[in-house]
Length: 154
Image 1 (tube, one colour):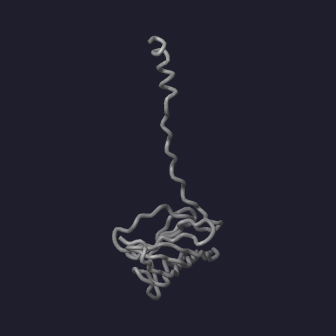
Image 2 (tube, helix red, strand yellow):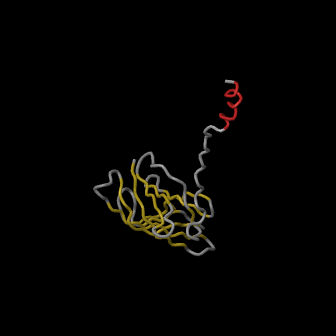
Image 3 (cartoon, helix red, strand yellow):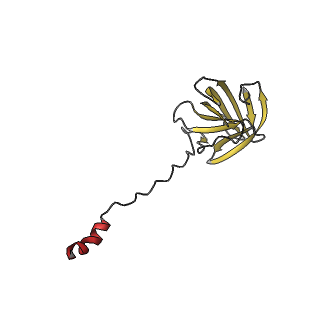
């Protein structure tokens, strides 16, 4: 019995230890060498719809979220998540989105063109099988990224 009491601290110390949960990985500041980064996980909007857009080739990172209401585009440039208000639109694509939209003004303008398809297997949303995200920043080259994604609605 005395031997067991003497070994108790050693047995407790050798017992199972809690493993710390790793912190989630930080979003990529640059995707595939481009001056556009990944944005963090995004929630569904409280009302209306949002398009969640990933790069269509390479890394397949979530690089943009476009909201129908409010009409805004979220992107990450130089490591900073930025929201740009829609400034122009052409056509109707469905779910509150135009075929082609322009976001921002002045030194930073993003243009988003996307094709929207409904599918029986998706309720409260749609698929974006193809699209283009174009980023124009003053004094820099224009960046054009093929995108694809999903539209989710509240």
